[in-house]
Image (cartoon, rainbow, N blue to C red; front, side, top):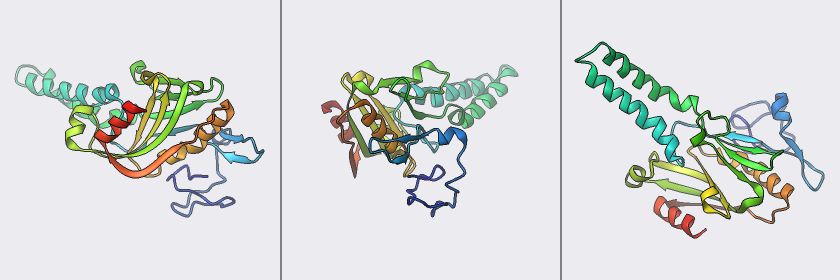
Length: 227
């Protein structure tokens, strides 16, 4: 079981998280509904949705473009129009504010819909081009990788430079695959119980392939092409 506040693993029966002190028993009704019975009949805490924490953005080029390029263009346009019209300063201010808050408004997440037996990326987004759905029956492998995105690769892949844990739900049709990039340590692991439950419920004989060795972004892309 993992702490819902910091993502650290909690010993069974513990009342509080040893890392951040969050009470384990104070779960809302929505969180309680995330508890599922596994095949062995033993109760296990399964998080049905996990949000990507932190301000770094990676893994969704269209999302990234919306979060960065649109406010940047608005800001530059505002600066240009500043000398011609009173609308210029307003546009520049709006572009600046939008750049600061947009990631909070459109938070990335990975959701497991048990009714549909499907994983949904960015389920709460009002931007249809940032939402992606993958049926569990179409998954051929599940990988968790630790990837370093450098400044050079960041420019072309539309990712923030940094280190990420990446959940890869590889589909039979690679165009339907889902990859979620987590910049915060421990964030990706919060969703592992849900993945295991979803695979078990659907009867998929798939083991999660998890590697903690840091790999370069180029090597990760090459692995994706061969997976």
